[in-house]
Each structure stands twice: as C-alpha cells, then as structure tokens.
Amino acid sequence: MDDCLIVGGGVIGLSLAYELAGQGCAVHVLERGLPGREASWAGAGILPPGSITAPVTPDEKLARLCHDLHPQWAARLREETGIDNGYWRCGGIYLARTVAAAQGIRQQARYWKERGITVIETSPAGLAECEPALAGVERGVTAALFLPDEAQLRNPRHMKALLAACASRGVRVSGGVTVDDFETARDRVVAVRATSGRFAAGTICVTGGAWSRGLLARLGVAIAVKPIRGQIALLNTGAPVLRRVINEGRCYLVPRADGRVLVGSTEEDVGFDKQTTAEAIAGLLSFATELVPALAAAQLETCWAGLRPGSADGRPYLGRVPGYDNMFVAAGHFRSGLQLSPGTAVLMRQAILGQATDVDLSTFGVDRG
Ligand SMILES: Cc1cc2nc3c(=O)[nH]c(=O)nc-3n(C[C@H](O)[C@H](O)[C@H](O)COP(=O)(O)OP(=O)(O)OC[C@H]3O[C@@H](n4cnc5c(N)ncnc54)[C@H](O)[C@@H]3O)c2cc1C
Image 1 (tube, rainbow, N blue to C red):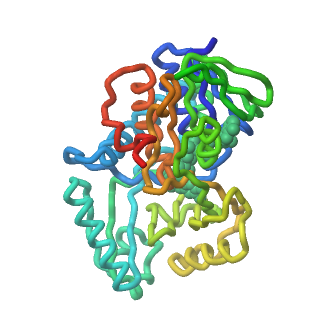
Image 2 (cartoon, rainbow, N blue to C red):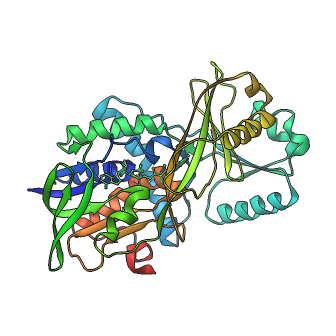
Image 3 (tube, rainbow, N blue to C red):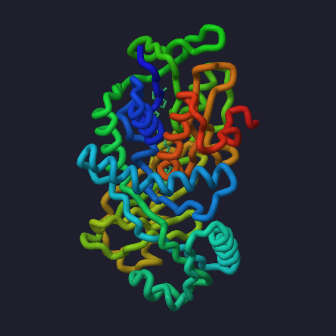
C-alpha cells in the first residue's frame, strides 16, 4: 500500500509528490489525462515577488516562501533531471493608461514598498529605458512601475522537470486514471475508486485543480472552487523584442528568451469549457500590438485556453478535510498556482507528515466558510 495517493497530476499534485518522496514516502499520483497538461500547462508562468521584510499575513508568508523556493527548486530540478525550467528574474513592468488605473497601481506600489519589495516608479518618458520595445507608448501612459524582482518560469518545461524528478524519487504517476469516488470507514478514507480499479493508501490528497469541488462533494464536503477560463495567444518574433513581463490590468505580455511572447489573458466564468474564442483572441492581439507595434509582424503560433481553479475568496484550500483524519486537499490557487506551488508543496508535506507547518494553515482551511 502506498503512503500517499495524490488525486490530480498538475503542478500542485506533482510538487507535493516530489516533496513527500524527498522524505522517503511511497507516493502514487492518479491523473485523469496526461500529467501536467491542464491549467499548469496553460498558464503564463509569471512569478510576482513576495514580501522581503517580515511577511505578516499567512498569504504573504506563503508568497514569500515561494519567492525563496523558486530559484532553489529551479536549480535542484536542473541538477536532478538536466531539465532547465526557464526560471528567469526578468523583471516586470506595471502600466496604467487611465487616471483610475494609475490610482490603482500607485496604491499597489505603496503596498509592495511597505513589504520591502523594490518598486521603481518610472516616468512615462523613462519607460523606453526600462523596456525599449515600449518606445512610443508613453503618450498614453498615466503611470508606470518597474519591479526588478518579478520572475517567470516556462511552465511546460517545469512540468516536465517535475515529472522527471518525481520519477527519479520513485513516485508512480498513472495517467488516464479518473478517480470517481472514495471508500470510507468511520473517520478515514481507506481507498479511492477509479476507472481502472481501487487504490488504497495511508493518506489521500486531492489536488484536482478546477475539478476539486466535484471530487470533495463525493465526501459531502463543500469547497468554493470553480473553473475560470483564461485564454492565451502565443506570438513568435524569431528574435526577442521584449525583455520584461508587461502587465496592464488583467492583461500581460510574457517574453520568453527565444523570441516567443505569450499574450494573456481573459477571466471567464463559463464552466468547464476550454475553447478559445475569436473575440477574446482578437482583444488580446490588439492589446499586444497597440503596446508593442513590432508584435504586429510576429507569427501567431497558436492559441489555447485553460481552466484556473478559482476560489470564492481568492485563497487556496490547504489542509485536512474536516471529518477525515487522513484526507487532505490543496486546490483553488486561481491565478497564482504556479507561483505558489513550491510553498504549497512544503506546507502540505508538513501537514500530511504531522510536522509543524512553517505557515499557519487555518486561514486556508476547508472549514473557513
Ligand atoms: C491562462 C492562464 C494563465 C495563468 N498564468 C499564471 C501565472 O502567470 N502565474 C501563476 O502562478 N499561475 C498562473 N495560472 C494559474 C495556474 O496555472 C493554476 O493556478 C495552477 O496550474 C493550478 O494547478 P493545479 O495543479 O491545482 O491544477 P491543474 O493543473 O488543473 O491540475 C489538476 C489536475 O487534476 C486532474 N484531475 C481532475 N479531476 C480528476 C479526477 N477525478 N481523477 C484524476 N485526476 C483528476 C486534472 O486532469 C488535472 O491534470 C494561469 C492559469 C491559466 C489558465
């Protein structure tokens, strides 16, 4: 029997499997499709900086933990697997082009500064120094900030690296296995029932992303997680034209080192529908080409949509499932699951193994209402 069964092989499930296996646990990940091919593949990989001065709230502590862990995990994954996950401290620009949006990002700048995060307020005219591709855009800009500590990773590569690292630590990952139900005995979940049979384990953790609510409903447990679609267009300019992540409201441009640029994203409450739409992609392309006219000549390589696991209060659910001693959940990371994945894995490993957690998990509890 495995020590731990993990239901869902996205970035959260695989990071947790990697972390548990590092402590000698026998771990089996059950994944309905191909591992790492849902939201964790579809995301953009932006890693905003965490608080530098002592973080206060549990959310800040989790973000700070991840800020520290990402470069360490990138180096360790490269060492263990030879795969470079593309971690890159490229810096991020935050732009406003209306008076209201300028107020919003100045308020955000104060919040970041109070937490010791370096924020460089850039005059519209100075923008081109920070990001030459933005030359010319300054006429419409009402405020601009530069965060040198914003980073990114190439999430499809990160997923490959995690899978390889899990394999080298002895984690079994079974794709094409859909978990349908749980078998309980008093206050324990003794096994899961899946399309390909019954699997028993000492501990079970649901990391089913946007699908986690339906899974936990089988146990009569409610979590407010639902799918929020995000669409992305991928451009290729052959050679890099941008070097920073550029954020404006919910939209962004993420330059990869090879000349590709991700243009994202939408936030759509349309259920489990992963289609791309002409209107959304047209909107993203006009955002991109208006900001960086050089992108008008880029090749439109492909478009896709993914389902973020949105939670009602924007926080993930992390910890034990009430009513069951050996049942856990880590789901609902919404727009930040890639950013928050290594810290989530460490804290969940601590919770599952009965170790003291580095961050108090009650804020993220399933019973928080
Ligand atoms: C367009 C877009 C842009 C994003 N950009 C960023 C970003 O820049 N930075 C960032 O930090 N985050 C970003 N995110 C969010 C991030 O991708 C998610 O928060 C994160 O991937 C969630 O990981 P997960 O493992 O919980 O979910 P998923 O990756 O969705 O994995 C859940 C897995 O569970 C499996 N599963 C579900 N039900 C079952 C079942 N019954 N049996 C077996 N397996 C099951 C699914 O098949 C899936 O593989 C973005 C997301 C999208 C869609």
